[in-house]
Length: 199
Length: 251
Image (cartoon, rainbow over all chains, first blue to last red; front, side, top):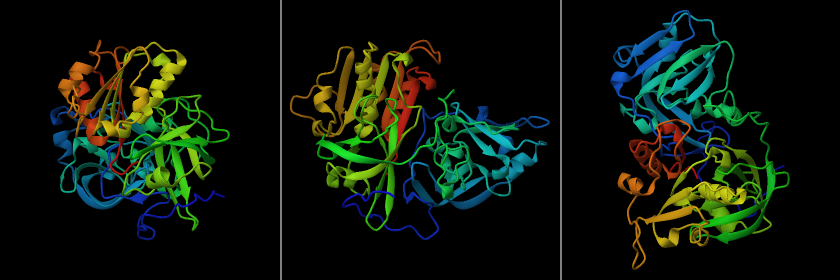
């Protein structure tokens, strides 16, 4: 039973019912959270690769941008408790990218410029649930928000949507990534408030 | 990047407000009595959960202002459109209760073994975790040289000013006041830029991930983006620049 904080009362409007996971509040801003400087990789040096399948697969930026794209509107939820509604993204579905690889692994470790990593089950990347996004709000995705391209997995806390993503390593076992090593949850479902290990 | 070991489950504990002290007109430090607090590292934060009498709850994260081993404390800046910070900075009194859990975050931390020299760059209330690092350095007897570059709007907005006016040996505090300056101010009077960092920051050492100066940058996103990018441009390896950003509404 939580103690009552004397004199505390709600000061924000209630979010639309069922729209915002527990413990989250809606913001119109797009806060930035990262552990180090923003990497800036020229597009001529950028590639996206998938390792750990029968054959390694790699796309240059030019090849990646030839792939079919989708535009989607979705809500995003950061573990630091802000949620942003109706964000508009353009990206390549992970169904397309993983569809180009022959593999049996059940997990991936996504990796990024700057050394960031995060782990996800393959099942959470398939079925129209995940993208490598390069556009935000009708414009190229800014570097501070993960551009030129970031992972977009909006049904999980946003640290799983790795900024500056450069590829996936397919794995048979679920191994913790950067924040997961510091005590954040291995899966990160905002609707079950899986912020930290054990939640 | 190797992390620390994954800790056990973080559970909510009742915190009782102890002494409160106003750092500035907008910023207050609250001592928190938390039985069985597991301890923390300098630079970590904790989660606060407030509960209204109608059951409504709100959670936010705050940097820990105390060094490991000191009585637990947080320093909170009031955001006028905020929900939790107005309560913590205006309403909460000694003896009041809310819940906390933590410590959280294990990357933006400093231990004496990490070495230095240290460059600490703070924008506004971003000084809070850096103050914990400074106090940890002093308490552990570390001789690591430190420069704190601290950007505030005005002299009245400087947090921990009495402490920072008399830094311990080996610690230099360099202020910049971006909006207004006292009469006869001879210090910096602009936002931190590359030229200022070139003057203040330790020169970048060998471009190796494990040697040379270590930088901790904390503040609003625009401050951190600019300072971190400038440090990289001045030769700091990205691995030696640790950042913690406050989103516009994050704290």
